[in-house]
Image 1: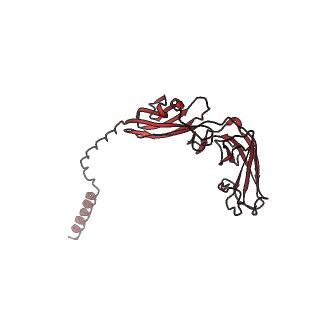
Image 2 (image 1 turned 90 degrees about the vertical axis):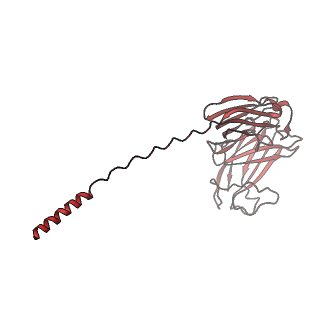
Image 3 (image 1 turned 180 degrees about the vertical axis):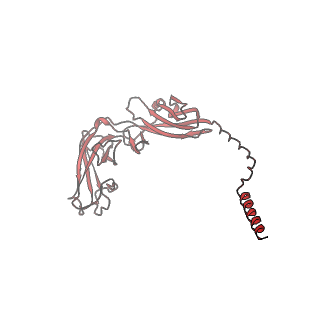
Length: 291
């Protein structure tokens, strides 16, 4: 009787173990979801006004603004590449543009040499009218720069342990109107209006032939009251320190008086602002040591 009980128990265990290892039946497959609907193919208009300024910063309201060439090219999608001429009051309109990314280029050829400008990677939403105004300046031709000096100023301030720079120079002619010099600075020798670390605008007063600008480094405490102090040589390798010197390279251009707000554009590949309203023929270079 004892043996029978043992055999039945063993058999029960074997059956139980076999039942536990069986795979359950697969349930029915769920319904396949519907494919999302494609968004509407929107089109719209891109329009704006082109404003022209002369080299002195004065607005031009003549019929010249009716002849600006505006080139529009799409990058996404690649469906549009066309050029139009601005109409009354400098207005331009591109109709039937699809949603996407566009590059715009503005050029003008007339009695003055105007600097071209660009708008890179403009996001156009479509389905409505989008506005984009631009301004262009004439490149100066009435003067050239004859000297540019970048020097330290240990004898000007009482605290020479921080960086100071005295930027000064001369031009070849006088003028009854004020003019502008654009100076670009860098610790790299290939400094230009497209490759720079700092840039500053210096105004030449009417009937003057000299220009100057006082720059101070980060942490400067002794600023001469006769000098401006809005330009900082901080960061980018320029640090304060006794006995330390840094070579700084500069380049100066005759510039349109509104060069900082006209004919300039953001170069997305380099992350810098390109200033086109400067005379490349009047450029002069200089190298200075900052202590």
